[in-house]
Image (tube, rainbow, N blue to C red; front, side):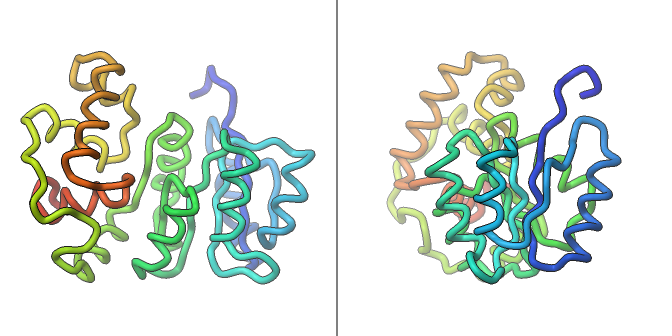
Length: 217
């Protein structure tokens, strides 16, 4: 990434020590720079008016405006900006609320720094990123019929391949490159997968793949 423009990141967290610590670590990484810090969603939105960013690392539980509400506002006002949730919790209600609000990734605060950087780069490229630790927690809490259709139409072998890569957080272009097919073909497969499974978004696709043993954690 040394020959490309750095990804501008906003770090939003009401705990100053965590916020500043993460900022210092990210500023040491090639290809990533922290544009600003904010202590809650309200301050984030104020700063975004004058400080453009590419990715927001968003805490969930904050005063004034929490991460869920702030994510909705960012998604509506700055659709090109990607939000990655940062949480102390693996509870699925936070996961679903943040994904529904528009978050493209979800990391636990116990994640390693390289995983944070990987998440930032993945969502910047158009993919989704959900930590394996989080997914493992969700599997333990998963209700068998939740978020997927019981009598879904079987997927083709190629659709299954695409679904697995979607769950791994790859963008459609990355999937196309990996499977040696066009992005347009991946777009079509992804649309077919959503239709066949009855899933509405990536979050539900992950559950579908877990339930049908298409991915292992």
